[in-house]
Amino acid sequence: MAENQYYCFVAGLPDLFFDSTKLPFTVDEFREMLEEVLAPKDKKLVNKYFLKYDNENLITFLKDKNALLNAKGKISAEDIKEAIDSIEVDYPIQNPDIPPYFEDYIRLWLDESAHDENKLWEDLMSEFYMDYGRESKNKLVSKWFEFNLNIGNILAAIYCRKYGLDINSVIVGNNEVARLIRENPNVRDFGLSRELEYFDTLQRIAEETDIYERERKIDRLRWDWLDENTVFDYFNIDFIFAYLCKLQILERWVSLNAEEGERIFRQLIADLKSEVSVPKEKE
Image (cartoon, rainbow, N blue to C red; front, top):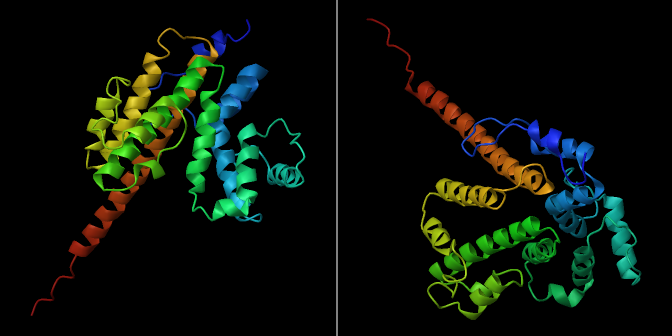
């Protein structure tokens, strides 16, 4: 196998379609498959995608050291504790599996004055994580993080303005789009129409009143973006990364559809039961 080329592996992957109702395999199963085939450099790249579970676990651990952590995270409670202990004595973190932004986040958490500022700690983690992803040397991964950061910020800004809330309090990250939104909170398009070709699309999506349909349209936008940005990628890590992102989207909706199907079924049974009446005895 040539470096960073995965001909046999990619050729054996089933096609994914946005409207599919079944998964070929779960994200966790695909992750295990990747562990077997990816070169070390590419594993590190894919692991950035899964850091969201470790981010969640870090916040959970900082709030409660005895809390149960998400098993999808790969950084153990022991490693998190060791990192915190190192920072408390101002000693560098030695564990290469700990992303650099963990140190910045932990230092802020340990600063008592920071808690007096009513920080939204989940938003702060999102900001650190997005900025970290945008710094990736892989162009697709960097653009993917940037794209999702922009989606979140634009929709948040639109809703804040609609309900008269402070826009600056919800914008995360430090890219150009975040800067423009902060500088132009009262401009109709936040100064973004000429910057982003998908701004108008997001504005239309924000007008969707059905939450289910709105989320579907956002994920469809993500899916189409992945297609457009990997059109010439076939057997490399970019194709595999895009496949992983699509599989995550598909898994979400297959799961939601299953839950919705079960809810409708239970409601149907309940309705049928309520309609059944005991026949009156003949006189």
